[in-house]
Amino acid sequence: MTYIFAHRGASKYTPENTMASFQKALELKADGIELDVQLSKDKIPVVIHDETLKRTTNGKGFVSEHSYNELRRLDAGSWYSHQYKEEKISSLEEILIWLKPTHLQLNIEFKNTVLPYYNMERLVYDLVMKYDLKKRAIYSSFNHYSLRELQRIDRGNEVAPLYSSGLYEPWNYVRKLNTKSAHPHWRTVNTNILKNFAKHGIKIRSYTINDPKKMQWFFDQHVEAIITDVPDIARSVLEGVHQPTPSKLMTVFQKLNPLKSYK
Ligand code: G3P
Ligand code: MG
Image (tube, rainbow, N blue to C red; front, side):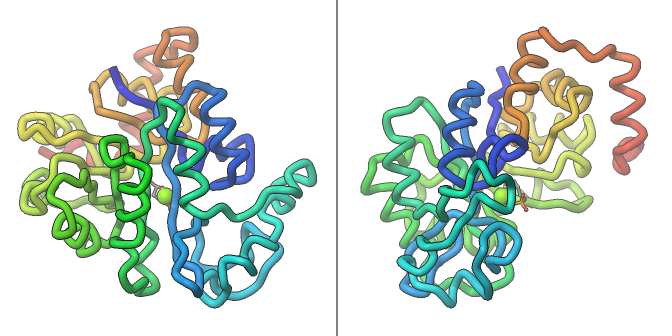
């Protein structure tokens, strides 16, 4: 059975990466949440996608230029809707405390491809350990050196390289990283690639899949998980409540997938 991860929380219905978005994900029966982590000026891991504040808060400048207390004073919900004007930038710790008593799995994405966040891996790892969440945590990043660092800190960490282009034989690359998970953009996989990942026991959690037909295709491939902004739609597709027709399904996927014809 494929797991459903809510991308930045249930980010279609609520302001992304806020407590409201994670609560909504739980309410919509997601199996897990995906969130993005940056560091504040005083080295507190905070949950926000961009390096800068402009898009999703009423603040200005870089996240890393502000202390956690300064970040907490910002409004992280009004950009989405007035209804969410009380939403704040959360610390990762706050989310871990909230998540602990739930059933949710947790995908922590390190946003460290643009800015060098010194020691970020250790800071995040220590928090996960503090709340005894190691078994439910999956660390991902587009910065694969960061994933190596997480493995160096603890060989038992589950790390998953994110990638978004047509890597050649990506299963061999993932094996070289010495890990058993990968998080490819949906456009970068085809049946041959998924078959090879499966052959090597590599779990695939593909992102960001919001279209029911694409969801159905991935469920049919028995991937480990899909990462979606709309966990409720994914759940209804998975449970067969919403059934896209197979012919349409293939047409859509074939049309959109640039790797469709490669072996
Ligand atoms: O982890 C999957 C996805 O979140 C990666 O891209 O930009 O949405 O963080 P982005
Ligand atoms: Mg992300």
